[in-house]
Image (cartoon, rainbow, N blue to C red; front, top):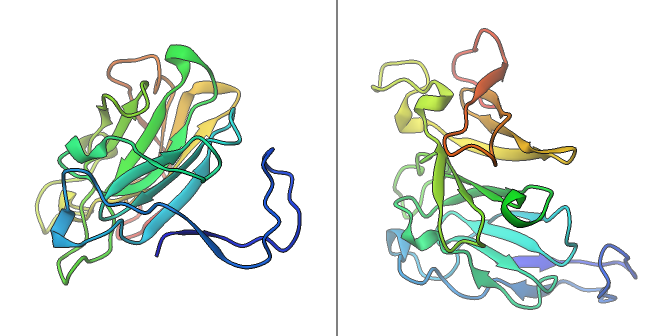
Length: 212
């Protein structure tokens, strides 16, 4: 299933408002460039749709199979965001910080809890950041930062660790929140630091076997 839009009348959320009254496919319509993950063809199921806080025409969407895509023209065309080069191409969620230049960053949470072709769900490879529209990606959080313990018999193992959502603070582009299988975490230097730090803000103490 690709990204779809349904509009019941004129809308004003972007300059090029759409007046279609029926579902219409707007993409994405191609698979990952170099990594046909798990031998599944196409882009795979859509995990999310998010919008840039500064540019209403900039959209992000991602797939468990083929990674992250973005559109700079409100969904008319889509570009591969370069996640094929990552070891875990799976895109769970993406947000962008508010700002310009080096303060403008895209954040990608990897992994998902859904099986592909009968296999187990993709374990998260943490959070990645790009400041050049996907030309280069840097890992800024791992399972260790989110207190995921190793081993099948430990509470919240790295084998089932997931990050389901990300959120930025529009008043401070350096602040990034992550909702994970070990709790909700916050970084206050997600853009400015080469190695951002993370603090669990909920719950304290952690609760076993619960997703957030």
